[in-house]
Length: 177
Image (cartoon, rainbow, N blue to C red):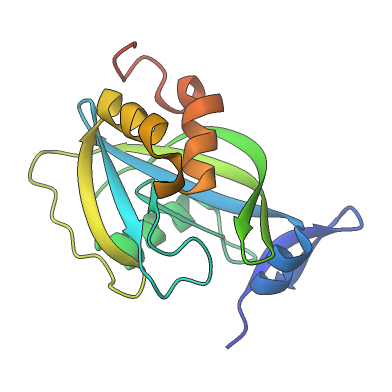
């Protein structure tokens, strides 16, 4: 099955095969979600079967919207499909753009709508094992320390988000370091 994503080709938004977009490093639409509980952030470790960045830690979930799908609808859908999370109300935080080598000759060049959702302590999780091999709640200051100590254990986009866009994503919701 071929999955198409919205990508810009010669300046025009066009449906493009997802793998082709990553092989060519085409600029394309994406959605990322951070679920928090106080100063803790819910991370996922990507399943080993993922076609890029397998086994690396990432934010709660991320994906590419379908051609005619609203970003918020995509965020809600992907929270459910990837993490088994329902009932949250993701808040749009910002749109950011980044370009990163994700290995294997693949490039992520994404225009990302980022969402933040606050959860309670008893948030039920039911991750899809084809997508997620492990989850962990991590205190924000500890996450920054872990990334500094072992950046190779985290996806390029998570490192970029926290290094460059943290204030736009979290505002004053996370402790100052």
